[in-house]
Length: 142
Image (cartoon, rainbow, N blue to C red; front, side, top):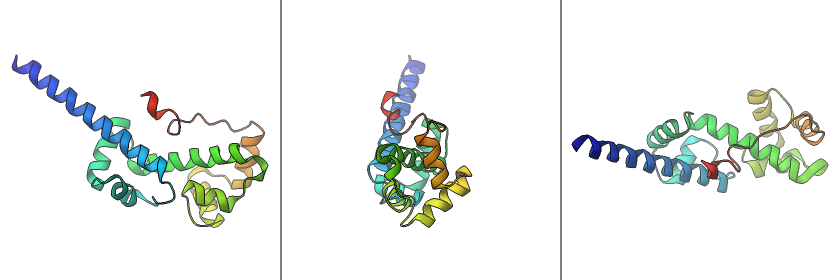
């Protein structure tokens, strides 16, 4: 009997951690322009950086920094798809939370995805770059 209770407690604990992780990702998705780094993310989610790191690793098997990067990239792709050829680097940088100007967006894309905004926009809009959105619409399906 004791073993069953323990397993039930562990399962509830994991479910609570999963719930908190999903809530933290929701905070990131809803406030991209306010969250510049993992510290800002933890602050906006009202949890410590250590706790954020722990629940995200347990739930998604990824570090917060990696999730933050992936979310930003998905947002950039989404904004390009939404705005089409009218998408401008400066606006996409601000709306995706990558920075205050096109230089920040360029630096982000070059450093993490080895591309430029112009190249990415062309690839997305011509169908050469197809991104499966994990964070923007897949999070609720888990």
